[in-house]
Image (cartoon, rainbow, N blue to C red; front, side):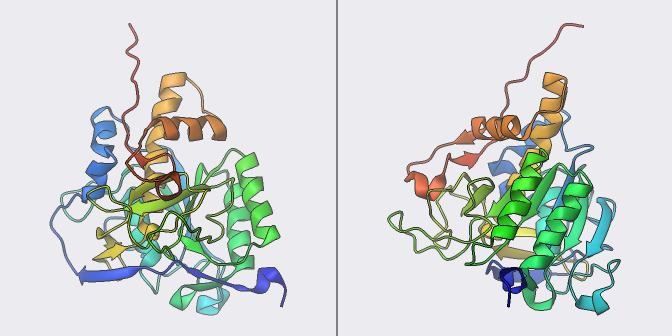
Length: 313
């Protein structure tokens, strides 16, 4: 078997509960990353496209159906039909909701509730896929000129073709956000590496809880860029339901949604679309360091509080 034919998986996550219906709810993570500050200034992720490479999505979910602009299946599920991207696991639906669930009177709201989602299903039933599927999905996202690629998946194999696909995406000014992994031992002295998160070029995201404490399961390593909420996160789920999950899988989409807000804000503020390195720099400016080693927090947790220039008319 070639390397790209090897298997890659969802990063393990913990499901705490599931409910069919829900009154209007804002997850603590929204407040922790200070997304409401951006909303109050009119920034909700308008015209930003995020490719979510995962298990698919519940395209009929009331909180998501108006946010999905395209979907495509790269797996063997449903006979490999590229037009059917049903989420049989709920994971892809959950991360999609964290990014961009509608801000309506019921259900949950995402970090960037006006952003557009491109659902690229590259993991089949059971959360298992091939590296070739992930690579094809990345290449597809690049061809569609998305703004952000969000991946909450990983494996132990450093596959050169996967690395090159990511480098190509970044060279095309696409931000690539990846979950760090849930193999952590709660020690800063040991490195846990899951790919693609461990690649230097990506934005690797670890998890913290509502008290801004790194999650015990969150991978620590020298490539970690930022941390974000990833413990007991309520979001959309399969079959038009809602669920509370924990994992760095949940932290990564908080950063993807935050970047959507940063893109909209910075385009208005600077009068042009910033490059990938410039957007990364803006993200790092909006982090707060906590009292932990860098291998467990990177630059700190994401806190959206840009300096707003008020222009005279």
